[in-house]
Image 1 (tube, rainbow, N blue to C red):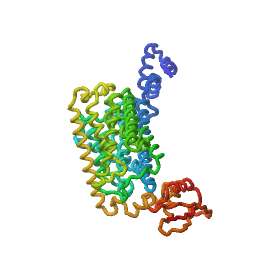
Image 2: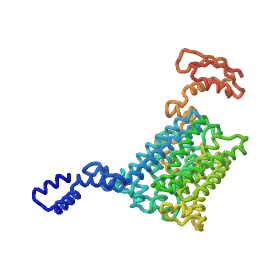
Image 3: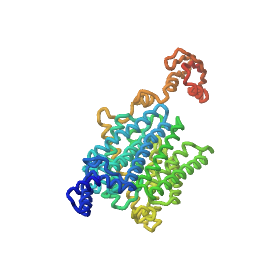
Image 4: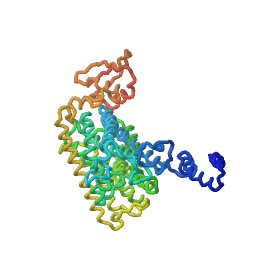
Length: 542
């Protein structure tokens, strides 16, 4: 192109130096040549460059693509995608711990929660949480429907605000799923979904604004919360307590072993995997501090699992409990969350050990909670509520300005740095967060329960039958449930013929019945192992 310009100007017998000057001016002002020059001069720069005309290849209007860092954007997009896997992780964990007749409904309501909260976040949630035009209590409405997200994010100008919106949206989607474990096996699907929408709006969004928005009152106060101790764990722990009290105890609240430990282990694996990235991504930048967060999070989870496993071995029959290890590792994750970006790897050991010990002994008070009509089915309050309290307070002790300063952040540190007042600030944040969540949860449930057709508690018949069949229309293990429901356990039972799956093939199996009317575990296991048989004939003798 330069040769063409030279030939053109030579026709007018212009001096060579004037021709060069004109060509230089044209190169700087012509869009096509400017784009070519920009691309060639910045081949090694890790920024996103224009790919077209009009708005220069950008889907938004205000933020220039050239100011965004493709590496930082890729990091946060990957963190967002990996964090999502925690949602089915919680679902698998709960479905494994629950009775089989209500396990599928728990798994599905976790996915429904993700979908409903994602829409809530688009409509209003993001604006309430991260608007820069709010007051000390809640954000403004300048980001309704994700409006005005076409600008660089103030916390990291190298990434667009639109990307940050989906990142925090995943935190919003995960949080309500935790509450569901407290009222498992006894709440109706539709009213629970309605509650989740409004709880996210009036509880999570407010607490997130207080914690992470520069205008939020606890942020201004100086509370430290790197990964979401208050908006995620303290909020769900208090909400679990209120929810369990409002709906009442299960018909049969006696402790039973998990119906599927494989699901529990699988769910824990998803949660642990996603949590590493969720905490590390909370700094919104791939730097040395994110690496530190990876390490502290993993160490605390590991120590939590080991500590709880040892306690279970000592206190409960010298057995290495799989459920105990999974629960302990989650306690370690909960405890380290607010501190993960402020403490050293050595300090994170304390979070895992102390978090697991306190949460473990908190379980001893479950009998008391049942007596006061608080049936927390899967101990959400003990794990997330108490674990969150432990994490918040320990953050005030072990936070260090040298750790936060790795990426340029400035804090006064905790007690280790001589700032003992930080413990008091953390306590204020803790009490305020739990009180707000408990009050909002109880008020929302009271109102929703008064609306015709939205009563929260499941029908006693549906609860006995199982919410999978009553609400979903199918069981997670369909043939096993058919067998169980068809077995006749009466004092004068003789021989009952059961056809499974509508097949004509008939198999024979004898099942012994104990005096208490229950099938012996050994024989029932044989049936469970052979559910592919087309029919079963049972003979019961008392």
